[in-house]
Length: 379
Image (cartoon, rainbow, N blue to C red; front, side, top):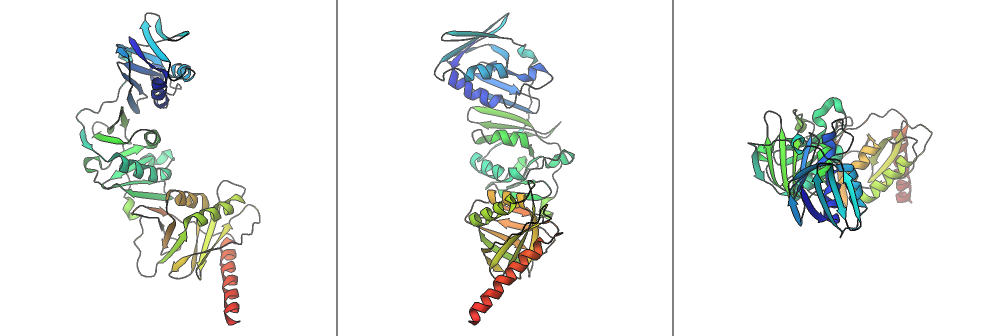
């Protein structure tokens, strides 16, 4: 094999491929990249990714360990010309003033994921990327419910849930035959750093696989073989008597971060109470005796009330709802709560039970503020 390109081009390709060939697999061939003409591939049996590299010369194929090759190239100037040649003793990587020899393996042993006879269609890659990036924080990491460990394509929306949060984002187009696909979270993380998809092909039998074609990159994925739950049953359908709060997202997010900063663990059960055009937070089930006296103004339609949330989950919700104002709608103190920003995307957040004195403190603060208002009005 003879392969010639610049260090910069090879470095860019290996940066992506090294996330698939991670050098910790029991089978040595999975720790390698396959150079085949101008294509460089990595495959770990779950993801098969091929990157097209601009080359000066490319002939033949070779299978080279990814990690030492990537580490070596990372210390060579981007404009430097790199030549890779293989022989009986392995692969020789040469550049101006240097030469390194690395071992090789038989290219015939390199694995691949097949997506033959798949149903393919063109897609709006930018819209797909926006939807996937929105719902990805809500993907479950719990392996016992493996079918939740990815994002679900369902008609004209993308959905993800971990049982505590559910995020839904419209695609702007119908998935068609792609409906039902569950893209695993490790593939989602990889897609976030790749060009937008141009074409997607899916094969359902004998196991679900997907091929995503992008500019200069083709990625094949083994999809999660399972049935995503009927997520629409979780989305609340509010009737008369529901309450809606409109809050300034930036101020609300900063307030929540202050509330969670005074706890001793990474998450906290927080209570939101609302009444008289104000929202007050408090900490419930605190490890130490913490008193929170803070409030924000809000547009409130409906009755006064309160609900408890995992503050970390609520903070994540406000992070992905990128708009100046967010709305919260609730109808049952123990039922799911709907959070929206601008557009049709939304997040459903399950509340927690109030077990401490946090709710009393928040409601007491609002009552005190309302009393002050009444005294001021009377004066």
